[in-house]
Amino acid sequence: MSAILILEQGLNGLQFGLMLFLLAAGLTLVFGIMDMINLAHGSLYMLGAFVAAALVQATGSFALGVLLAVPVTALAGMVLEVLLLRKLYQRDHLSQVLATFALILIFNEGVRLVWGSDAALPMPQALSGPVELLPGLYYPAYRLLIIAVGLLVAIFLFLLINKTRVGMLVRAGASNREMALAMGVNIKALFTLVFGVGAGLCAVAGAMLAPLLAVQVGMGENILILAFVVIVIGGIGSVRGALIGALLVGIVDTIGRAFLPIAFGAFLPPQFASAAGPAIASVAIYLLMAVVLFFKPQGLFPARG
Amino acid sequence: MIRLVFLAIAALAFPWLAEFSGYSFYISFASRVLIFAIAATSLNLVLGYGGMVSFGHAAFVGTGAYVASIAMVEGASSAFVAWPLAVAAAAAAAWLIGAASLRTRGVYFIMITLAFAQMVFYLVNSMKAYGGDEGLTLPARPSLGFDLGNETAFYYVVLSCLALTLFFLHRLVHSRFGRVVQAARENAVRAEAIGFPVFRYQLACFVIAGAVGGLAGALLAAHGKYVNPGVLHWTQSGTLMVMVILGGVGRLWGGVLGAAVLLTLEHVVADYRIGWLAALAPNYQQHSALAVGLVLLGIVLFAPQGIAGMLARKHRA
Image 1 (cartoon, helix red, strand yellow):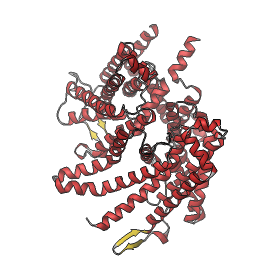
Image 2: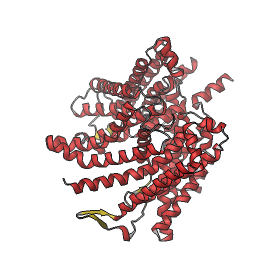
Image 3: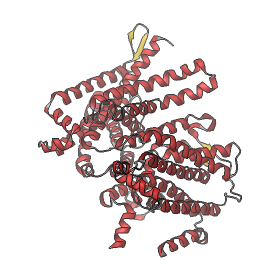
Image 4: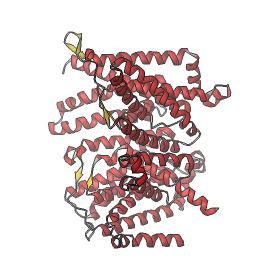
């Protein structure tokens, strides 16, 4: 085990964390502002990946396909919000869980009907090789691109939320919805906009991760749970919390998977270590969440004061 | 009361009718529905009567299924050993998870129960000695003093379990304990102020539901003679929740109705060819989940009280 391996895994963790952040940012705003549990958020991520795969194939250009997939998915999200989700804001969490669970089924089958069970989104040739970051540290160029895109979107979101009028309304909605309403904020339009932005972020994450992971029906279901873990750790409604939570989860998960088996092997009998290492590594983030909730039941950065 | 008697007669006569009309396959299907009815009813106790929105009930069903199966594989072929072990293990898991989760409220409770269920899911996935992600096949169904391999005998065992569960739930929610739990659902602060230790009541309710869920899990493993980590996946918790909401939250028959309607719907869409639909879309049966999704969406939008609520309204009118 060397410093290079640790650095490499650290970068992997950062890359995974930033993609989780793109999912979690939309989810935490929907959750925090509209008080709505949206299980179908993972479906928008899947939709984004499939749309990107289809557009990349149609246009023949990776960049163009991915760039087009974002507004298309955002538009799909806004249509969904106007037609259906809007009716659910006033209902209890149970109804929202049931309705969005139904949406997962509908999205899965709809995607299967249109594109089949899986799709291919190949990595652009120019980025498929490694880059030498430090002497001896080779890192895949494509993963570096993911990190760059993730950081850019995070900065964009930060500016959008902290420096613009729309961002101010969003923050007002997250910290006290009734008060924002009473002050004359057009909550309806704001909700639709936030939902569209969230769906667009899903598409960015889905399209960027597609060459690394498989584009298949059901891909959104496991990552959705990770996104929920992130926003609960970070504090529901807080974008800053989502960023910190996502980086924590990404790094703990990646480092845990890479090093826990080795660490266990150092002081445990091998047959036990080879079983316990991966097991503990895969529950590490849930343990993290339980610990955070135990000490800070509202998450690290609660949006409601 | 008369309706209950009719229902009991129908349930008791079902295997005989199925055999008689040449559809004996449906005896096994009915057992599956009844098992899910037990699981959904146990979730309804926490969710409906306790007001605790647990998104991790599959953890208890799965714990029951796995403990019963592991007991069988390790040589305990009697259901009198395997099933109580499964129930005890599920109750213990519910006690641990409940004690930690019940310190949080609202959305955080939903999420933390989900997180714990995911932990159990991954732990089971990594148990290489018991099949890991490939699951565990049982040599036979456990013995209850008589052979459970017979579908009709198994059906009656499951039916008795469900009847006992429903009777127990009915008595429980009308007992002092049940009143306190429902009072805590309506207003935990007031219940606390009157002097009830709300946390302990809710935890007890959670543990009871977990134990019954464990029984359902043990039955489920025996039914298929197979168990895999899929029983613990979060979508399984979601499906159980859907059954409860579909049937009727906080209604005695909610879980049973929801399980019956959802499983029958899935089965009908997947296995029956409807002529005009097949003419429109020849492969529509591969997309049965689409129909299930649309029906669920319709229920949320147009029948928020669930099926039991709809029936009760009609009955009163």
